[in-house]
Length: 198
Image 1 (cartoon, rainbow, N blue to C red):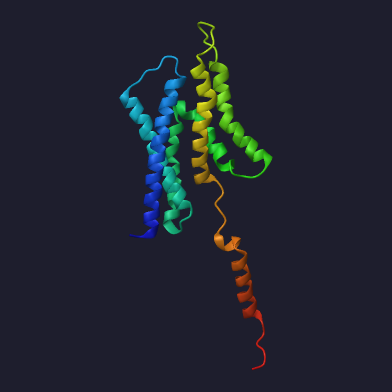
Image 2: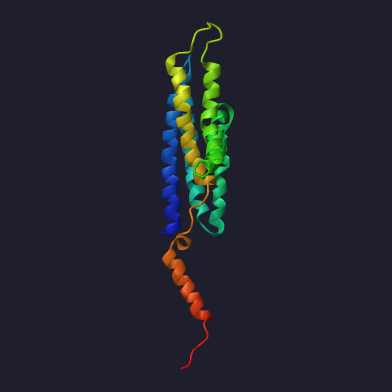
């Protein structure tokens, strides 16, 4: 089997499994933040399936970023996965689209923007959902804690996925190795040196 295909298969399967796990956690979180929970197997399976497909596409896109030739175009497969953020998934989109590319960058500003993208939507939802408008009583503690803790956890997992797809690529080993750089300079200088007497 072609080693590059083997790498794509591993990335796809890992993404599929991690995406399905994320979808299951997202479904549990939805149950915790709801004051009137309604459970259905079709709805649950749809959420897990969307998460699995999203993870699969992220895995392939991540592997394609380090490939050459036509396989490099497969990195665009992450774009259809953005359907995960349609409708009620929209508040989690900043975790993937904003925090993802910034989360591993150095500097106070990128890290501050990434933190705001991860925590901001959770704080906003908590602020508006902490009181019941009809009874004017505080929302249950599980609902408030699920917004304050659970939502940033889900967003952080999406930020990791966004980093794989849109974050900076690691530097190539050849440029990082001082020994290789020194040996390449020596080989270059030997080519340029004039020939001595025989």
